[in-house]
Image (tube, rainbow, N blue to C red; front, side, top):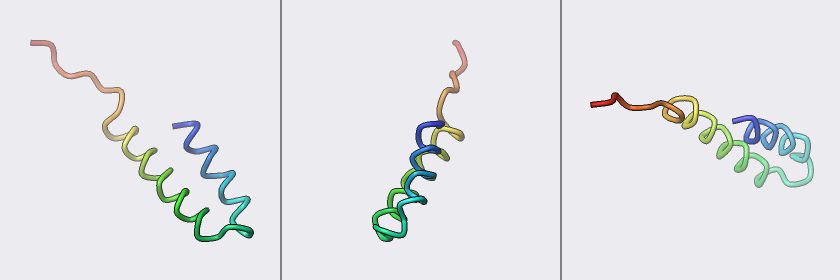
Length: 47
């Protein structure tokens, strides 16, 4: 999650040069952060 967050921040700083690419990468980073926060790291019940 930290890596995706840092990548999103760095893409925002380069958005003046590559606007469409930076917005695309930030959107992917947001999806990665959401997926890891919502579904990642949890363990299922032991049966």
